[in-house]
Image (cartoon, rainbow, N blue to C red):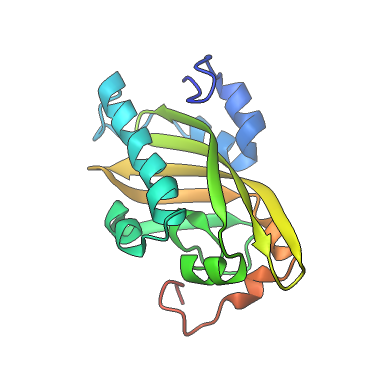
Amino acid sequence: MRTEHSGRPLSRRAALEVGGAGLGLLLAAGPPCPATAANPSSLDRQKEIVRRLFDDGINLGDATLLAALYAPTGAGSDAGASSAPAPAGMPIPLRDLRRAIPGIVATIDDLVAEGDLVAARISWRGPHPPQGTHLAGQTMHLFQLDHERVIAQWAAGWDWLEKRGIHTLCTPANPLLEP
């Protein structure tokens, strides 16, 4: 594995340190799905899909693109979130996040691909008008892709939002949340 940011090799041990126990368990679970060849061009394509998810889907607010990048039966998990995940493992839907933090920007700090998995370390920044401050935080995401669509995802590190009460924007009536 190599990090997108530095180009240096990233060992499984280093990935565990960056991504926490959830990433470590997934890496220890065994080889990736054989449906995706682990050649450099397919790995680059998978990283490009995740890059589009954050750069265009989240930063530009393109919900149509987000829906297209996820398989209809995609599963997700967010370690520590109080609600079911929305795209990119977010604890709240994109429109609610953008309403709470107008102008929020996700910056990809590191992007690593191996097999059918793409790991991303993301920095988030944006103004929070109710408190008159700027918010900043980091999250770690792991995406499993098949046929160029996200079929599963895991995310950790959203506690910086929950500490500000932003997770309370979730409502059962929201169609992006699972029951």
